[in-house]
Length: 393
Ligand code: FAD
Picture 1 (cartoon, rainbow, N blue to C red):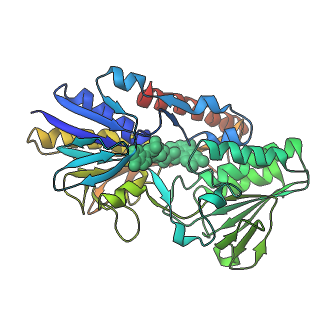
Picture 2: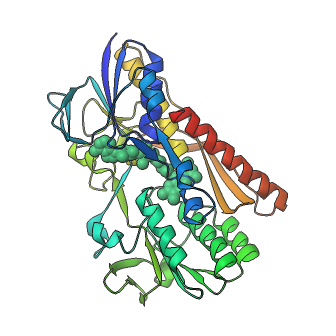
Picture 3: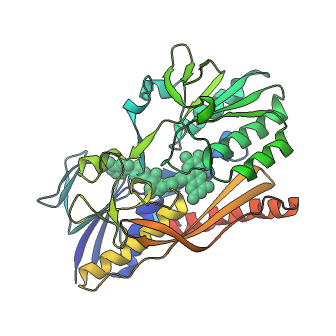
């Protein structure tokens, strides 16, 4: 049967979903609403910050999606009328839908970090949405004198890409070691334990000596407020005035999810994990970082897998068939130096209201020869080429 589907957000989740929907049925009318003409990938943006990659390699357009028959609308979605089943964009155009998919990624929790707002992000960049913020952090690192301190404030989970702050610390240390070897990287962390911790800590010792210092939750590392005027980061333990402050604030689902009535008090969107349908808003599906995925870390590979599974579920629902139970896989590579990478792979299935990890996952061994680390770093590059080609190419 025919169906009108509107997808909001042309990132890893939304673009994969729109594409899979169009391929699932030529009779499906698929509209993708995204304000940017060009998507900028967060994945591999830590390499840009460290000067290992050019920003252009992070850019992906929507021409191929348009050529496949997806109506690409270069606007931000501003309001959603769930009764009339209609989305309005910033220019006032309305789009009617039978099913709406939200993949807006993240926004920041203003109230959760006093002192941090859009103006503060111009002095203390988060670089947790890629683009101008990525380049700003890069510029600040380049301008810093030898012997300076770079602080990275890391929020608690759930947050976008849990290993990425530590990958960033590693690659910044790689840059500093080569150019400003008396400098330091200070991680102020709202968590005690983190993803792939033993692998990271071993690599830091091996590659960067004592250049990277981390203060965890129990040692007072949680950042409680910031003052951009004095470049001060306030933690439970004390104040820091680093030369470069990369402040990654606590996060929640992209704002449009709240406007749709799909976000709960946590700021994220509860879903039925079989269909990704919102528990709070009818005929609306939420995928990617914005949804409460349970055991699945928020990543591009998870968002892409959810996008495809959601497309299959919507095609089934519109055709009056029972949706199949999705089995998702996610793989996350962390690069700590150009020839040194490791990975975490997991399989996930619906369990109650969330996804739970099932057997078959794997993590890189803590003790491994450097050639395995080099091989995994090369595999990471291939993963990026594959997922971006699948999503946008
Ligand atoms: P996004 O990809 O962010 O897409 C959201 C889109 O929605 C954006 O294009 C935005 O413009 C659009 N949007 C928002 N609001 C609206 C609106 N109102 N109307 C229309 N459009 C809207 N993941 C990995 O798998 N591997 C990695 O190596 C990796 N490295 C990372 C490194 C860093 C530094 C960071 C920050 C993240 C990394 N990630 C990685 C995570 C990955 O980038 C995200 O998990 C992924 O992008 C989530 O996809 P998404 O579709 O939910 O959101």
